[in-house]
Image: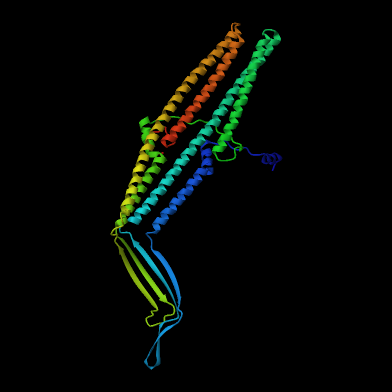
Length: 431
């Protein structure tokens, strides 16, 4: 083992750049909201088990010890004495009870619990979607801050190069010192802008770590790659896809089915119920005139409700109102999702228009800077004209960065609104 290799092992290993997918995985792993929702899913699953247990045989065991104040006897002729009731007795027994769900009330209760579990799982998908959107916003904010830092760094390099040139010209006496002062002022302003951009980058990194639910001081680097923002479907197709794929609507639909099953179970409250049971009892110390050592009995119990004062009817009506309220909530949610999809699509198109405008603005600003350099070299331009042209280039580059990331963020919002990640393929129900 060489000394160089040992030295390399002693150095801290740099963390690999964090991809967007890895960032979302970390956020889901650390999310408190997901942990709470997973707990709700487990509770819902146990409610299903609880409801299903009512369909299974119920087994019980019992034991009884009885002690009387005295023994009861009876005497017959010729001195014969018979114990009628002993002073104490011990019995053990067991029973098996099997419900016969002839009204399907129990099964409908199980179905309602299962639909509620499905609703909880769909809600978990909605929570994940919200977390993914938050991570995307924070991740792209870091990339945007890095791009703005690079703009200011490139501007500072250009200003420094220009400042060096002006200093030589001042030393040669071909340029007035006031032009050097103007360039130094521009340099100081650029340094201030660069420091502000670097501070914004640090804040963006803190926000990304917060979105990942980990200590904000955790070192992190991100992959500088922006996603494609291609959308193949029409606005109407995106809305229909959202109706099919949005987790919130799937959760509401499952809840609606659960309420329907619960209402049908309530409607069965006036139906007959049937139960079969087998009971066994053993006397450990049989004594007495009629005592038996063991006994087994089978029981078939049929219960037919006659009149409950209207309680079942009232419960059914309450259940129907629960369904009606949820139908209103579903309609309201569909309307809101439609608005969300359309607004996100409009925002995306608006951001794309701003990108095109910013690209044209940058092209013109670079041309003006080129003309300013040519005019100055020809002795026709001024340094103020050149400084203004440099500022316009920096402003145009900044506007282009902002517009590009507005487009990416609008696309992320559209992904969340539609409920699927890939929008580059024709719309459908497959995510």
